[in-house]
Image 1 (cartoon, helix red, strand yellow):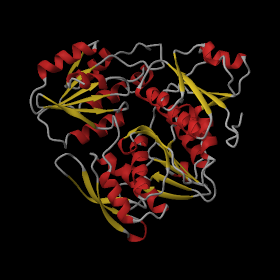
Image 2 (image 1 turned 120 degrees about the horizontal axis):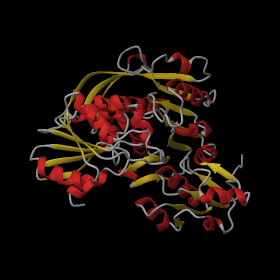
Image 3 (image 1 turned 90 degrees about the horizontal axis):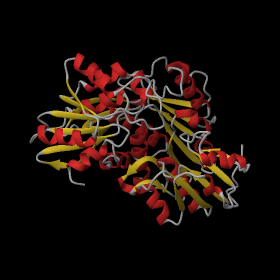
Image 4 (image 1 turned 180 degrees about the horizontal axis):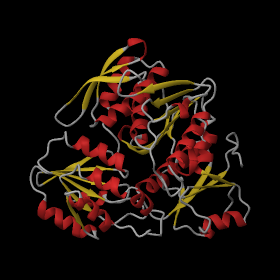
Length: 459
């Protein structure tokens, strides 16, 4: 593997520079004095931000983009071997790194690198931890998988030894990371276009836990099935969180305000008790908060700082994000694209004031839709009425014989009202005719479904 010399900045090219994680890494290297450039398919807020910092971005991925002096090319997992830039880099014998390999090398430059992993909740938990470290004036470097309002972006470059990042399991990229403290929020079947099955995913999370050094710590959801398979024999301290006293951290006296935001007493090691109030809805966010609190305790952050930071946290873009109100209809957007995430979001929504709950869902990838067709249908029945958009193909080209119409039939078979329209225009017209004052509309999915709510709001 090629190793970057951080003491001697060189020229680094990012193929897929507009991704949330890639743009953060590009900005980190540019700040460290590297000559950074890259390419992406189209303009975005992230590429605009990079260009404003003097980073050259090519739009459209072509071999000629790599014509200049380049010392290393970094690729995202979405770049395939038939990509013209991938081909050109190998024809020129340019050193290449994956995004995960570069992240691992960067993490080794920090005294306290922290990696937040799990099938769901990574961005929210990373953001909660970021909020706590900022409130504690620890001057961290933060790489968030979403837009965190307090840093007005997805990256903050600090001067201390604290480095916080999400650690995604897809393509096993997190196995190239170098955390000193690792968090595992949950382990579920997902990304089955890469993993064979749940057992294969669990093996990867075990390997991730094994990356931690002897003086490290694993903070993990104590209710993960067969937890001992993940934790037995590790050389690090293990801290658990869960529903009850079987875990080191657990909540009690949970109550919700009028917008579904929870308040709870947290029981910790040695009988410690504290009350926390969150400004993000749902029981799942209690679990995210417990992981963040356990980490803060590990770093000996003052209780009052933790309490205030979590009370101040207002969420990140596309995580139960309030977009606005039109005609008395509350519009929310959420990134949920797995049945468990959908269930958590819709359960949270039921505690939010509304007359009728509408969910506009855009399935994400054919592989995931086929693997979880019945689970998607069951999860979506938590809404009062479902509207389906076409499947967002992302990196896939084979539809595997699955479609949104097939999902529609599954939902209707469960007795739930469900509509399908092949275009966003048709969906928007339907919603304009049927959503009324007092209703709540959630646009949901990891694709571009957010545009529907934004169009209705006139944004």
